[in-house]
Length: 86
Ligand SMILES: [Zn+2]
Image (tube, rainbow, N blue to C red; front, side):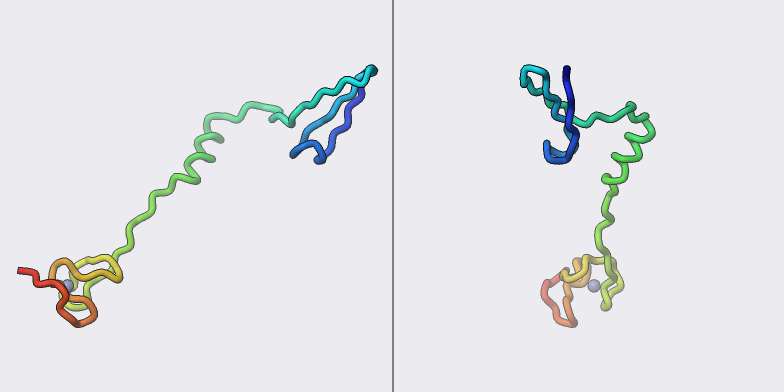
């Protein structure tokens, strides 16, 4: 005769079954049903959002540039010429 004890003490949610001769069996918690294709896609797509690169506008020439970077079109950063752009 087997009896089983289920608790969180055996891993996350596992059951320990003990037989009449003192044998032990461990069973893990298993999902009751297979997840559908849509549920799988929803779960996976939630973590795969593409990050848009940060953009800012140059206050001198108005060209798009990366924030905290020298403007590649006029070569200025904080009203000072850093790069000589020809
Ligand atoms: Zn500029």
